[in-house]
Image (cartoon, rainbow, N blue to C red; front, top):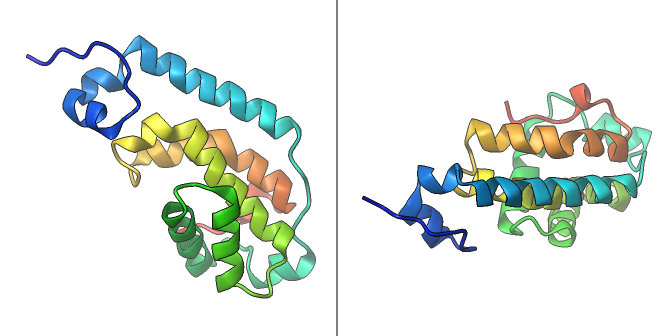
Length: 154
């Protein structure tokens, strides 16, 4: 029988404790704190950073290649907004910096808001749902594109 005595900020804890850790009251409190921090940050979010050319050439629903690159950049940067933005700009040179930064901010928001949810399965439905619920509305505001028009890897 496993006994988990609290939240330790490490993957080893989650690996050792598995589902017990995912349902602990301490973990729920941590997730709630991340969400509160995220909502405060969202209040100061910038809006309409992507211009018409950005939206026409890059930011559209069927642009699966962009969605895959964005996910790859965010993952490689461990959710760091600045590094994700730089990676996206390197891949899409004509994309404005402001627009690329929206996707960098999304990566950081996802990391902060969904850390515990995604730590056991970064490609899981629950991880994806968390990022969509917590961060996608802000991404829509930042890009100036309706959420339904944003690139998707599905």
